[in-house]
Image 1 (cartoon, rainbow, N blue to C red):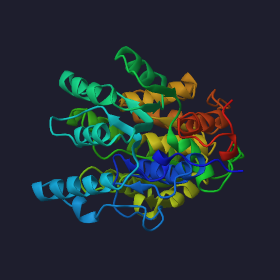
Image 2: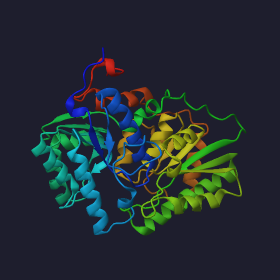
Image 3: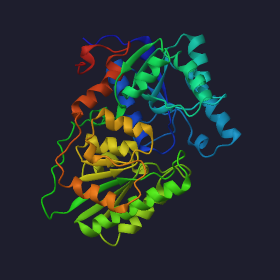
Image 4: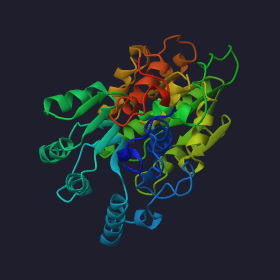
Length: 392
């Protein structure tokens, strides 16, 4: 008999870095919609996000017009809408990603904390990373909010250590990245590892690039971009390799379309090129990733998708969260690139080696998925073993 769900979990409001046309964050929403229903018995999870292709109609509570600009009207409209959604919710869930790195004086996180305090409705965070903080002031503000969150499931060991040092008093769940549950949320098993292409057979390289890096100087960004684009171009001239360009962020200001088009144009005359974007949806990006034989990624969740699909990949660790992911899955040293690869030949060599190197990440993908599940099964609102697979 299915256990009765907790009243707190019936109508969670899920907040995050949503509405920014980002495949990784949209994948969190896909997983959260499925997992809160499956493991917590949620009747109607609601996302503080505009409508998206990958979520059922009626589960998103924000208008797309609040994401079209950065003016006072848009900010006020978004905040008032979230306040209205909060008033109809049973709890608040921070759903995935790097949402605890920066916080201004007027952050909406203060609104969420105050609502939880005065309503008695719990707050939770699942599949998040905490830090590294962008400033001492941001750290002070964020720690104050973090200490008011009842349950925090983190996606990497580094985040767990940050919370322990901060004296976090709630339930800390050392879990995993929510995207680890993406295949199950889409109704699929974890696919078998992609076999290495036969000698001389055409292989397909999947690539995600980063359009904007707010933590690197412009000359550094340009050198890295040149190395990656020229390195891929040299690879397709040297080896029988086709390319799929994944545009994981299509936001007009923060997205990757310009640099992705530069890569497409650089290789278009030398191989078959496919382009798949955030507008096509999470399911489409996942389906295309499973068709790749190797990967070169700057977007963290490009690498996560490749790992889950059993595709050998290299990730350019432009932020600490990338290194934390590689550490979590025990990525072999032979498959690691530096933060700013400046030599196209280095990129070409790495990509060519992925066609033959038998090395694989040390962490089995099934364990990665199980850690993602702990965000839900180890929370106080879990329905119990009848809800799904149990923790190890």
